[in-house]
Length: 123
Image (cartoon, rainbow, N blue to C red):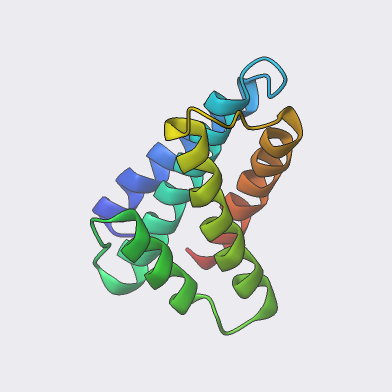
């Protein structure tokens, strides 16, 4: 793993640890936010390791990661999950009309855990 990829991987692991400590029932927005950033940094680590570059924007990073992993069903599933996580994170962070549910937070936290395991297998 390249040094830059290792730095992003460490960040993903720290976010994952924080995500698993949060209570989705008490803090659904924080859980969603943290789970998304877990996934973002894990995906960035994979891209940095494989291509030596990671896009600066969230949308571009999600798109490049999804392209990289589209060769198998599990990769396609995680590409879709990453895109959904971004949408949930935008609601959690910015939408003052909708409050994410504890169930959404629980599901995204579980997805983030699986996503990190998948990314680890790619490194």
